[in-house]
Length: 317
Length: 238
Ligand SMILES: Nc1ncnc2c1ncn2[C@@H]1O[C@H](COP(=O)(O)OP(=O)(O)OP(=O)(O)O)[C@@H](O)[C@H]1O
Ligand SMILES: [Mg+2]
Image (cartoon, rainbow over all chains, first blue to last red; front, side, top):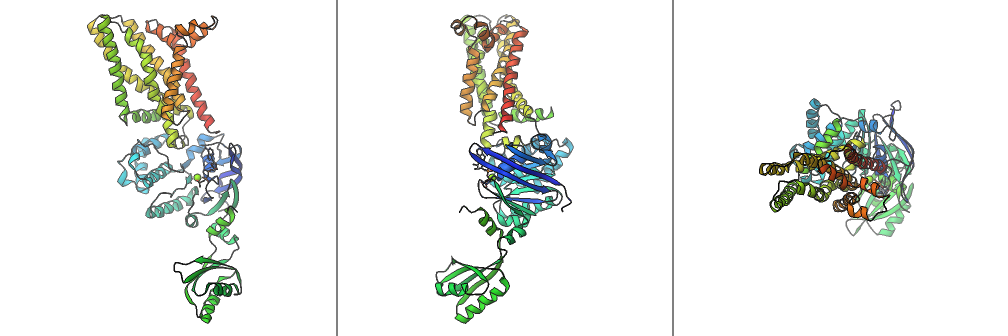
């Protein structure tokens, strides 16, 4: 993996809109054969960064190279090699589905004889068969998203920049698109932004998190998850007097924190225990419940999730 | 070159994707036809004078209507993000849009050729002013179109694009008119007379085809298209 060349290199990138600093001193690399997940809360600067990488906006300061070309100096070369899906998949409403695929293929310089077969392939891959003969304006939100995705893939680009690619898609299509991204990601370079954290765990090799324009973390999803305390969280649902249960749980060896959560039923309570070692602790919880004669309705250990890392790094406290 | 053709096709076709184009052309032909025919029967002479005299005024309404959509709608729908991240040069996009709107307006003007043919059948008009008149119409239309296209890029509201385009075209048309020249200090007169879109049209319309007039129109067109390209470039720095 390390031997692969960096296809996207971002160095000390800055961009502001008037008073708002959207991107502050961001640097990262994406290597060939890698799928990079780009996370961050709303207004973190993800879209802005992607727009700079695709030559839609220029940066105030810093350097960005895509496929070895500078996005400011050699913008046409960059644009030739990149497939870009903008945030809300903007499309020409009066074009037909095939018409708009043809329009983009022509501008992408796909030779006439290959065009028809590429378009057919895209219709198949993005599940557009049923709407092929409709006008874009008549399509539902999810189908527009699919068309946008087809447009970004039609020239078989080496580098893909996808801004929230699965937003608006139905669950079946989400699974298909994730598989597709994984498949493409084996040989090509993909950077995608998303708010769906489990998506990152299944599709991305590496993750970067940005918050208010600043890079706050980067690493594989596992690395990031283990960084946050590295521990396990245990979810317990017990029927019993709340305060007594809580202090008893807190008294168990190895527990670093206990937090209460409402359960679905009023006579039950949920607790989340944080511990450095989950294996022995679940047994301890079970024994405790048996000893005190409390009904234990749920007991599960979970590795610290990306969600926790994300909220710890980007919460607005 | 191929990109310009692709962009041209898309823009030209999108005129006909809505009923606006047909309404536009019909209204244009009916208004022009009616004005010319009443002029013909009142004056009872086979002159296209009325027609070409009215054309610049008709263009003031029709041309900004034909260009208002071109950029404003892209900005509103966000499709610039699709278009400008494709491997196309800024000037190719501007030329594609300009040529599409030029062809559209030319089509409307060409359809009105039925008028001089009718007139020719009825009387025996001098072909000079008719040829000159049409040449002038195309040049003048081109100048208005380049202004309208540029203005369309300044807003995402089509109505604003139409009104500002109309006002700017009107000002460009009027600066060379007699009553404006009359109120100016005399050393400014030749400058304004040269800058006015209208004054050049009059001389071509008389059938006097002077290369200075043609150069004037081509430079107005070139200037506004150039401004448009610069504007797109500057958007990236927004
Ligand atoms: N064209 C613009 N003009 C002014 N401010 C802008 C513009 N584009 C983005 N911003 C600002 O830059 C900041 C970053 O926005 P950006 O769209 O990059 O966020 P994001 O991470 O994509 O958020 P989201 O998750 O909501 O899509 C925001 O504060 C936004 O208001
Ligand atoms: Mg965004």
